[in-house]
Amino acid sequence: MTLIWNDEAKEDVRKAYSDYFEISPSLADDWSDELDKKLGLLLQFPEMGRRVPDFNISFIREVFVRKYRLVYQYQDDILRILGVRPMGQPLGRF
Image (cartoon, rainbow, N blue to C red; front, side, top):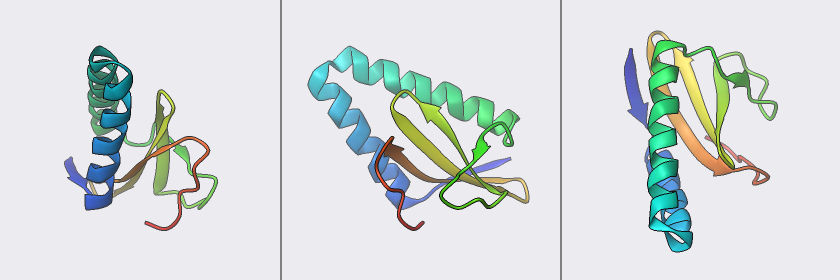
């Protein structure tokens, strides 16, 4: 399984980490650890996430990491992270 991050998703993670860090550095580290664990599970079980209701396409899915939606695409043994967005924020286009 190959893991690929879109540039926008990388920026989303930096922003989320920074937001948590402003509250507490340990909270930011805990969130980062949670994200890493979720990614590990996704690499083993890529279909564990639900279909994203905004798109309703079988290969675009999401899982939740605290108050964030990790949106990903799974096709042909490639897991592509599309975005990590706060819940309640529109996803827009990927």
